[in-house]
Image (cartoon, rainbow, N blue to C red; front, side, top):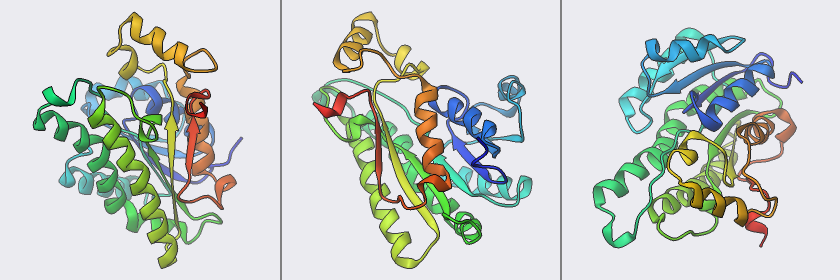
Length: 254
């Protein structure tokens, strides 16, 4: 398929996990992609060299407004336009509320929620300009989680951040639609995915729990989430905005 031919996408957290799978799927679908992550360009060069297609890289801490401004300028200089923003960068964390420090709380929300806000605000003008020439408009896809829909003990900051992404998505979708701004905004809510973020932070018992709690009886592959993201970014989803697309193996169906 070549649904994204001629379009330029920015994917945050694009060097690992779901973000990396999204980058590869978008390149396969014909898009040019600016990958954003925390690594230096030199450290990222090896990973980028394995990707076939028009791909660039920008170092970006998504919680830093100045770095977002610089990233947008880099996209304008390299590609001259921006059609798709994938706000994927995220961090995890666990522990009882009573022992969670305010610093740790802020650290999770800074990346998972502030990063989505800053990306939307800083990229909106470029996206709107590109969206005027696209049948379905430009697209923002925000990475939430099933933990933005249902609770889980001892991950309150993560739950709060991903729930915030869900409603921020709906609010901005309505705001853009009401103003006639040609940007669609949707969120994706993965279940338990076999990513470095999950596997490095979970022991064997936790992985067994996640697998057993999922009706389909397995973890998702990053490529399965990337497929959903590609759909929302394409004109196949031209009548979707403010939607939440759940890809969780049936977890929230119970």
